[in-house]
Image (tube, rainbow, N blue to C red):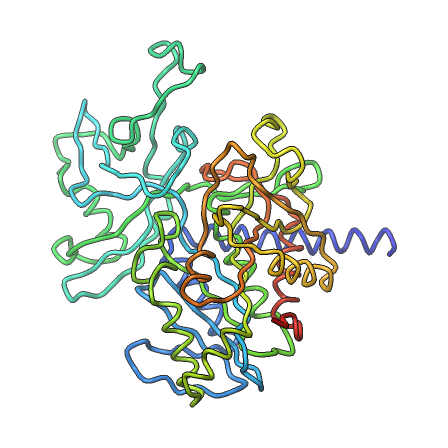
Length: 439
């Protein structure tokens, strides 16, 4: 390859990473992510299936459906729909949720009363411009997506003069330390309805029209490519909007569909997946059963399909930290730029088996993509993913994997620009590969 070709490839890789950053910025809540994914699917010929009606589907066609506007499943049917090729990720990220009684007035400030959602790194949310996103429900029980596109909130740090030992470590209190400032109190200001007035104005509604809301804080500043050669992706919500983006790109790009290509993006993974649209529910099994019924196949055919299927659980992985090497296993320590990471766990926190790892390695080989391995240091308890629920509910072989990042669950996570390219290539190859499984 010539030097000019390398420069052109580098430009393409950077542009695709910028698309990822734009997708994340436009998706500050699970509801926005699902809405944006739905729009892209429809532009590419996917037809919406209402979960409340009978499904009429045909081989060779493309469809999608949603659950509570925060979970989405899309699928493309090949001419021989005899197996499911599944990529699963999640739509939510750690943040702070606004409580129903949400206004706190103290010391001439109006603050928002929030509670923790998932496992955010508290101190990364301090001293940053924040805003609000989610949805409201009006008096006609209609949902309205909401993204306030200006910085209206901030959580200020306590000055070091009042906490001299802060750099030795400080335990933030979720109730006392993490409530953002919204405004100053003044004589003309109706404090109790201050936020509701903002919401009503944003949506051109009356304050009396708002029955309830589900709103979260989000970082207002957009992510960016950083580094001398723009080799890093610095962005909020990489976990797990990055894998949702890569899965969507692959689904839309794949050719020669062999079986049924499925992308499912679950809600509520960060808080345990135990909701109607979470991975630990009957939702996904219901989707696969309805596909089978829509094709006019008997239940025996469904069992055959599932036993011939394979799933990729796509959630981000821990890269070795250059300042904290002792936190990592001595040998199984992925790096940024090293390609997709297969995650292993003897306790099955990650459900990868030798066989499912081998299948994914084969996928990466066919895609011309490097692959890495991650195992937690033996004295560190790892997190879990949606994989266990897919494996348990469906009996499908699953590989746990993800792109490597630093600062997972920080308000601003860090990945490698080239890894975005690698992951999309691997996912695309998976969707169009033939006869990967043989068990």
